[in-house]
Amino acid sequence: MAKINANYHKLNAGYIFPEIGRRIRLFQKENPGVTVYRLGIGNTTEPLTPAVIAGLRDGVDRLAGVKTYSGYGDEQGEEELRLKLAEFYSRRGVKIALDEFFVSDGAKPDAGNIQSIFSADNVVAFQDPAYPVYVDSNVIAGRSGLFNRDRGDYDGFIYMVCNEENGFIPEPPQQKVDLIYLCSPNNPTGAVATHQQLKKFVQYARKNRAVIIFDAAYSEFIADPELPRSIYEVEGAKECAIEINSFSKIAGFTGVRLGWSIVPKALVAEDSKPGDLHSLWFRRQTTLFNGASNIAQRGGIAVLSDQGLKESAELVGYYMENARLIREGLLAKGLTVFGGVNAPYLWLKTPGGLSSWDFFDKLLSEAQVVGTPGSGFGPSGEGYFRLSAFGHREDIGQAVQSIQTNLKVY
Image 1 (spheres, helix red, strand yellow):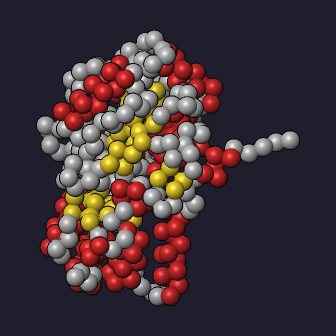
Image 2 (cartoon, rainbow, N blue to C red):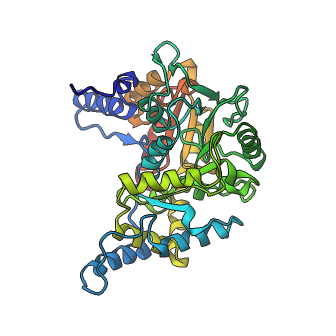
């Protein structure tokens, strides 16, 4: 008799984004013809840049010729792409070996799949609030107890609270944990960890033989040169950290799908020696993944060219100008706002003590603007709200104007 994975039943019912969609549809049905401004999901909106388009077309053209056609590629990604990635990190003073890169179809799949190389009885700690895939993938793997609706958390998980007092960057856990999920710049809060803050986590992980899963998908949005863009800028991080990154936001690859993970050969867990975790991830990828599209990889190579990096920086600048406009508009309205300076997300405190979902409904009904309730990212997100800077400039301007004109703040 076949049986299901009952851990799926533990998941908090109604993933946040489908619920947002349901409320928008209801509002539009009750208010036909009213324009809704979407500052919620972090999906890119601007066209791919010329250098990237040329790279993708080159990938297609290669498939049209007998001499250049390729089927399955290198298991860890095209060597040329991994060489470009190594150069990319070298500019930051970080040396990564070619065989420590694993090219994938995006950061989200890697963030969800990476936990499969660790024991199901590992104790896991998360930044709270956190990107939902970190938590949900570990629930599915059986590392949690039941979901507590009154608290908004899962039994068995350690939540590292991020709040105004600590600048939305937590301290390492007080107790011993095995896996630690960090995201910097953080989604959803927009906070960026300093070198010293990351150093504390690296020291904790090395002392406790824990492993850090570090999501750096928004690293290219960091404008402050004093802030680290990779955890490997911290001495000793290769012994205790896996880094995940993506072309999605820096180059508009949300639909193209291309990312990478770094699993250093020096990485160790409590019951492993150097090289073991690297070998496990290699086995996992070669068993369950046939590699990223060779067309997408040609696009990635183009992104990492001199011209591609220049164009990508301009694209990032476009979204960060959106962030500036949103931030200034919210501050002028008297709202308390965080983020939006070194990250494309703005994290605002709901006015008047409103719950996250009550503010969602208020913002939609009064200003016709959609954001993301903070409570959807974990218990510490209650009372906060995320807005995204990904959008067309005209739409961003109209959304900000609508907030300033129509939102009632007491």
